[in-house]
Amino acid sequence: MEFGLTLFTSDRGIRPTTAAVAAERAGFSAFYVPEHTHIPVRREAAHPGTGGAELPDERYSRTLDPWVALGAAAAVTSTIRLGTAVSIPVESDPVTLAKTIASVDHLSDGRTVLGVGYGWNLDEMADHNVPPKRRRTMLREYLEAMRELWTRDEAEYHGEFVDFGPSWAWPKTARTPGPLTLVGAAGTEKNLRWICRSADGWMTTPISQDIAGSVRTLRELWAEAGREGEPYIVVLDGKPDHEKIDAYRELGVHELVYGTPDRTEDEVLAYIDRLAGKLGLNALV
Image (cartoon, rainbow, N blue to C red; front, top):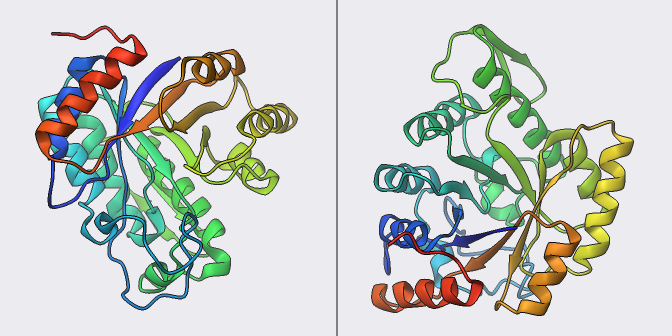
């Protein structure tokens, strides 16, 4: 089992380049960042954590573009995986987004991980003309269309939300049919079935319950769907607890990911070092 870090990037605090370098040096295997294009001031959508319009973190309205942040991180790291936890693809143009992701993947030598979400902030998505009741279908088409662009010499896709004729688009991603794609969502049967059809694995949410039960269900549905291998499981964990870590390892979780505090650069760097020590990681320097 491997360990990763997630940084809630913003225009204040530690830069993603600095955090990614520190994470790689400390022995972490993956570095993740989130995505929000903007936050409408007046919203009806409830935050899944607070249950209301309140946001648990000011950085929601200050988030950096994830692929710009990861592209910068790619330039100063060499081994750590670079991913989103999570991105919202349907808020972008799919052809342009496919080019962006493929470019970061190319420049990082194939280290990208695509964590995606359906999107809880329906008001934010409405500003991107995303129909709330069709956002799952829209996301599925985006992923399918981008995979065509990432794998075919002459790619084309014809769907309800994405439609383009035979096209050339390089670079291609290092992994076929595209970066490891994880869905960050609640572990409901509906979501797990969607993963079996359209993704490579599941990323829990910070408030996920009965993770063990969801993992077992996902593996059963994966086999029923005729998928080869096994789904990749990433758990967003809280404070490291060795008993809990051992339980996740026994469950077959592939990766535990820990968040970084909203503190000064020096404090975040010190936290990364302490966390690496608690997890028993082998620092590179």
